[in-house]
Amino acid sequence: MLLHIVKWVQKIEHPLKFYADLPGFRTPSGGTVPAHIIQTMKRPDLVLVDKDSQKIFFWELTCCADREKNIDGARARKQNSYAALISDINSRESDWTAAELE
Image (cartoon, rainbow, N blue to C red):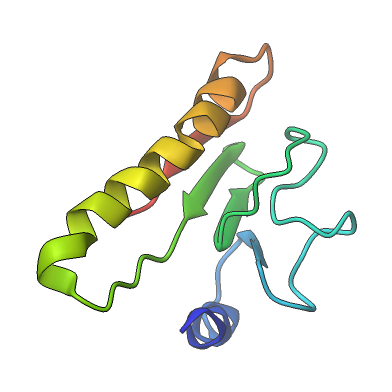
């Protein structure tokens, strides 16, 4: 699924730089979050970076076998997993702003 999304993003004309947790789409350090923004071991599935507005967006895919029972819990776990990273970026004395895409 992620590869299909990445291929779609590549086709669109936009000013964003993007990284994905797939070979060939990671940062030079092997992650998905550029080190000049923040050093982290977290690897969101897709990261969109807008250098002009200095915003970074994280998109984490959530797939569940039983959507009815598990989707809300899986979504909450993913949000909690990246909440600290987003907060760290937003609270630093830098010009970057982070947000989660849903």
